[in-house]
Length: 406
Image 1 (cartoon, rainbow, N blue to C red):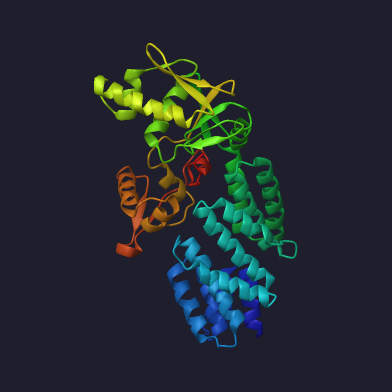
Image 2 (cartoon, helix red, strand yellow; image 1 turned 90 degrees about the vertical axis):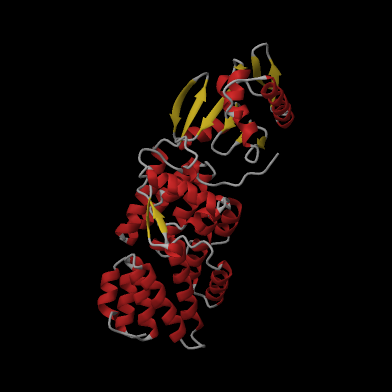
């Protein structure tokens, strides 16, 4: 490798894409094409970057397997930034295995981080944890170490392990400052701010207050019966039952939880659950059926007793009932939460990440666009959606998480 290629690679590693381009902008050999592609990606010219990287892959000879694998990793990262979640993950896995086999631990670790970040976007936390656990970060340079610690912090935040997240972010800050890359330092600072902004609302006894992530973590171990409107589960310190696929039953459970220790009138339950203007005999009969179903599902956690006026929630093991609500009560809030990362998303990627149909996502995007909350650019398959970061709170509890059914 000649001196100009080496200098360009060092400039890229230091977060200086313009310096790299000054050295290789007029060259057409495969290493220069690859470096130009990475530089263009760092500058945000993603389509141009993909074109250059593909040209580099074709130009490298059949024996230059390491160089081709590194280009594949770079293209995978561009796909991740572009939120192209359908990009073939097996291609990245093969490239990572090849890099590990040839001793390129730094680029193999980078490939692993891309895999984990993709899993996080898809809400597959267990797989992300398993993948990151296989990586030894000790020999990595500061920039890669910071990326590693940021990934660990992201998983810890999703798991509501705030102490682990704080420790990982402190290590990430140290590594980022050692790297001297301004963009990386700013990314760590933004991640640290998530721990000090409101993440949810607690509703109990008719009153509500905002909670930080550490408060949500404490609540989970408080022994209270929690009606969790962020994950659509009802849980106590011993077990949980998911109502994510039973939205009507969860609406009833939440209404009972918000009113506890009082009961809720049948007319109000009919209005909230069935959206009926008045509770006639048929609606009351339907309410009795749904309450019986809710009573069956919650039998280990709480009873649902009828009162002269309506129904009341009676916890079995917990001493109190509390409702954990999202910071934003909007049916389109999960879409906004994903868009709040500042990247451009396609409707198909949003549908894949949220487990919904693309048509449903498109309706949400259209509604948000009317309200001026999102913007789009491009047309057809190239159409992408963006939004400024949501102000004033963290979106952690709006993000997708797949929960099991008790």
